[in-house]
View 1 (cartoon, rainbow, N blue to C red):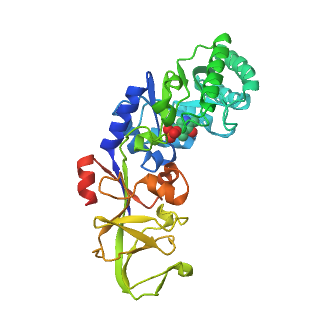
View 2 (view 1 turned 180 degrees about the vertical axis):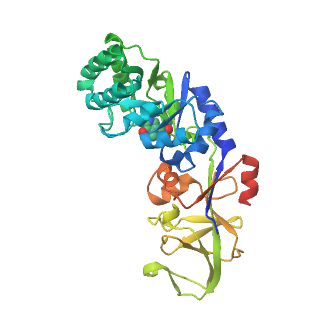
View 3 (view 1 turned 45 degrees about the vertical axis):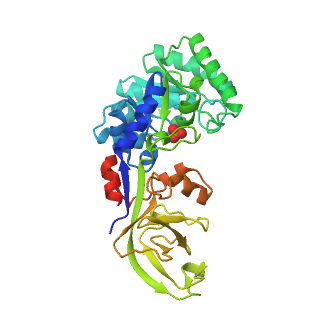
Length: 374
Ligand SMILES: *Cc1c(COP(=O)(O)O)cnc(C)c1O
């Protein structure tokens, strides 16, 4: 019995090639959160083989796991507490984002202790009020960084920002935040820092805002086929399949599941499927959520449990042992990740990163992806 996530590496490679064409400079494959659920190492290797030149993750822990897996490409880690293991990061050649002077000091201490030069990317907050240095502290961060560079403790190789509203290219915040980033770059040059890697765009801006692409784009969601802007035809790379454990006939009026969340309006057959919210099938579903059962869409009825859910077969043929498709690229009529996001009131990113750790990740090339899903 396996619930499995088929990862179409041909689709990831095709999506990567598109972004490599759009990005005038480097392309960083963002593989945080287990590569958007698909497996960090698998997405990293596939993207590096298709035009990405760098990898990006949030934590040092994620970065070290990639190094341990044997990946030698440059890796940037951009979200760490000030007491993170910067020494391990330096020992393993990990680039570090610097959101402020406290982080810079900690990184400089680690560099002195290990007699290494830390490669850093200064991080400016362009308008999210989240990670990154607030604009009013930027000149100070530049001055302290320039001094540390002169001492030979760091090399400032990058300046990075992040957009608040890129999913909607028409939002005026985009222009405002691009301008703030450009201003931060000018201040850096004025402080004597000439940095090769200037990066602002993630998936959405890489697709729709040429003025945000600068010398590097950081792309995560797009690699697995998610286009938050709805403007491009990326290839969905992920197919979640789960097995039917049992099929039973029930009479009209039979209540189904915890709290009797559904009453059968007619006699029907039910399929019990071995995947639940621990596997990434959200419990917060709308009532019209469906899966593909032997080629037709069938509704999920009753509450999704931790390990299982129930489908109203409503006349569809199905036998124990068969796989149902929870989501996929949509080519065979199966629901997509975007459908699931809509049913759950969220975005596709949350659906794919919610696929649980006990789900087996199975790499497949496109041709075999279709065959395996049948
Ligand atoms: C997650 C993340 C990205 C990648 O975003 P996508 O929209 O998935 O491409 C880029 N930059 C930062 C700072 C991030 O946190």
